[in-house]
Length: 62
Image 1: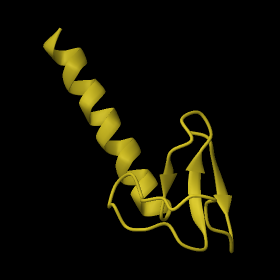
Image 2 (image 1 turned 60 degrees about the horizontal axis):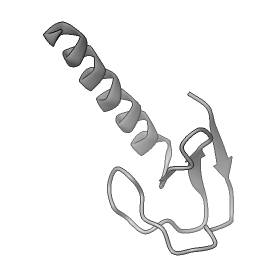
Image 3 (image 1 turned 90 degrees about the horizontal axis):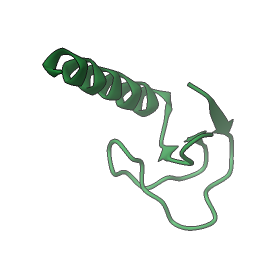
Image 4 (image 1 turned 60 degrees about the vertical axis):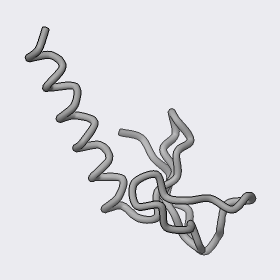
């Protein structure tokens, strides 16, 4: 998990949070590897947790 916290700035283009679809305003979190934007740390954490659970269920299925 590598990310950058951006304070008091908004993205150049209008963007939505990957998890909750809320508009990104001043201050957001951006994942370095994928360049996905999140409105706050909670949404980023929820996304990481759901991705982990998905991968875990795929590993059990195989």
